[in-house]
Length: 137
Picture 1 (cartoon, one colour):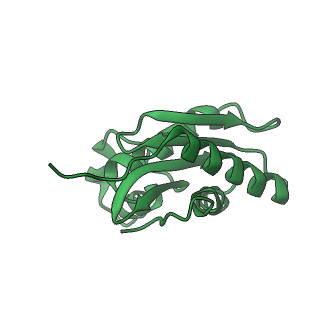
Picture 2 (picture 1 turned 120 degrees about the horizontal axis):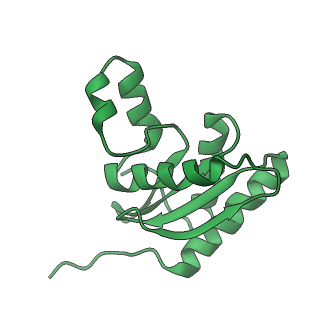
Picture 3 (picture 1 turned 135 degrees about the horizontal axis):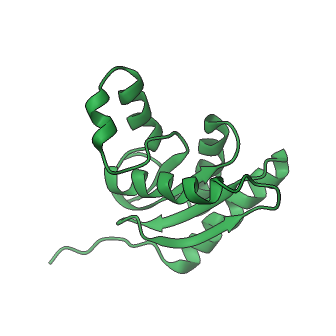
């Protein structure tokens, strides 16, 4: 039987705390979600002043990155480049969801919403870096 790494609650809390710190340092009010490799929520926070809708969007971005096994922004680009059939995918294809990769295995993802999508992704990557994980295979 194959063994693989898995994201723990402690990992999710470390990622979340680092992402919150990064957002706070830049004065960005966001929602942050950390999920496992199946897109199931492990940790969530909505900062004071974050847009209410961001509380729905951040978990969706995390779910997308985890289940698609790629950053949610990659799928957004696919759609923007004309592959409109991708709109039928049952995930939220907006930039700001990043995979958490350990030993070439996707163990989960982080989704952020509330500022520019490039800044959302930056916050997610800062959180992931806190546990020494990668965002790509």
